[in-house]
Length: 325
Length: 297
Image 1 (cartoon, each protein chain N blue to C red):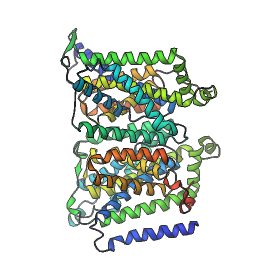
Image 2 (spheres, chains in turn yellow, brown):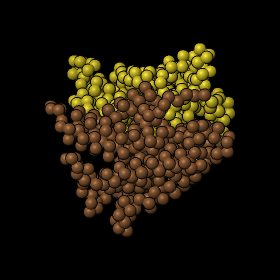
Image 3 (cartoon, rainbow over the protein chains, first blue to last red):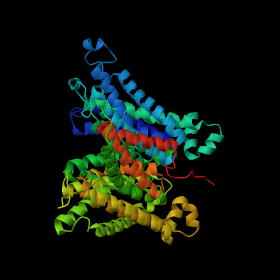
């Protein structure tokens, strides 16, 4: 199958998904919310993929950036820091507000740049991974001890009365997933993307060919954090209660990481495929064997790694070939 | 923090810190060995420690075996489980360039073990209460819990035995050679798989020893292990990766930091200081506090 046919199939699939809410009864169906979660995880997985798959830096702190994004949205909203008196006349102004969402991503990205500069200039490989894990735990302590600003161990509750349907969540999730896939596809064809892959494959060679290694890595790290932050913001509009146990849960780092590796690290479609397959497995396990579902999650990871260590998207399927490295 | 604490309080804090930190230390020694040969952050170590603690509890409640007397059983079983885990789960992944695969298998194992424990023993907090749990040793106005003191001795003895093994035996030397440079070690005829399996066996035997110490001193639940893994990682980084005595010392330093911060600042900030020191050490002295600077040839 040519890459043109692959692109056509992908476009048709996206169009079908975008129009799905117009099918009568679809919105109220359970699968609709399942798809929303698949999108959330696909976005998180893509963020990790950018840092680990393309820049080659294993980050174990994506959940911290997710939480920073979620908290930024909740803080701006509950404290009304952004829109002042407009909030009284337009009570829904913070709900799916693009400014709030982008700011949430930016807060995460700035935090990533601040922590990434010292970490990435000093640490390589596993040491960097350990450092990001430590960063996540420090963010946890800060959020728990943030007093009224962060709501302490309980967290913050945004006005959940704004929720009416899952439609905006679904479309935003789908839109972000598709935009990210296209964006990363274009990025790796660009000058910066080539530099990124050069750094991943051989830092020394990249550096001697004039690539600014540190800047390239920090940009990728901040970019991955930006994606996680926006995703955290989107999740806040769904969950409304933002707390250290819910949004700073390690699952927000481990599951996307696992989905990316199952789907194929360093491929554009891998994170999406991985998010879909793994989330569906988890969710069905949760419904059918509720007592044992985390066991099945653990087993699924181990089995996937034992038998599919290179990821689903690197199976010899023509449609995926142009996206594999 | 209104007045200067008495010497006695300081001493008590120090003792508490050392006794508590030794637990992190013994977990860190296991991690250090596994990391040394496989370059794998074995995140499931904490879950394995808790599993061992449940095993100790089952032996105590079911067969009436005293927790400390069950130590040889738990260590032997741990070593066997370690060997099986390596051969069954990590053998293929260890040979791969992509180390994410090993890391993820460890994560999967952690999920699996945590939740198996929940299904078998329930999610509630459990503990082992013996006739001597509440007793303590007092000297110079300082109190030391009896079980914690034994736990400390177990940690010291375990670390010393591992060091002796690494320094004096041929197999131990092979493990050390492999942690320094796996490729050269393999060229000299050391089988990577054997060395990795040995590291895993010892690592999980130590998890067993730590499990005995945890079971007798702390209340525990199936999910308590992850914090242990994290703190062991901090101890590992402080002590220097690949440095066995350093890992124990790193654990004790972390225990001291926690004890002092808890008393002088507040319990809520202990973790921030622990991980802050961790980040500082990683950045300023990534080879650990106790290692001489490592020169690459």
